[in-house]
Image 1 (spheres, rainbow, N blue to C red):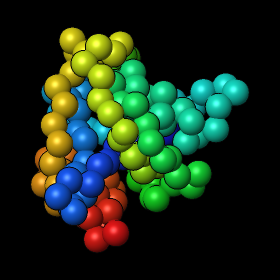
Image 2: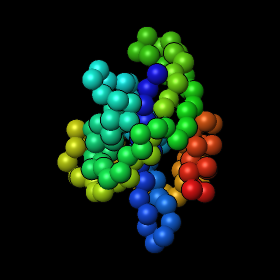
Image 3: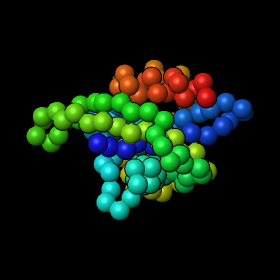
Image 4: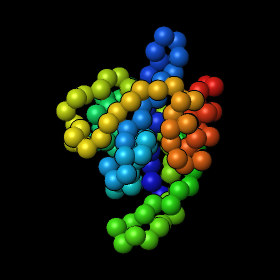
Length: 133
């Protein structure tokens, strides 16, 4: 099981979500990572949002807005099926200096645009539903 942050802000009355590139393939993704000892799943999502995207959070949901399953390719080359818990994280601000700043690109897009950019079908559905809220 992993946790992910669906980072968003309201711009001109419309939701925008933050996508980042993955380190390995450069695909568009949302910040995500493994659960952390001593942290709730939503707290771990906020840590990932900081490390991977430089997000300083506002409000963060206690419960996930959705889940999806994907195959993570391990260093051995073998796939491992992972369930992802997705938490909405309001972005209060973005920092330019953060742990993975030199390894990733960030982009603000509408949820519908984000759904077209990501590969995982389950994440596409979450993004499309998020745009309606």
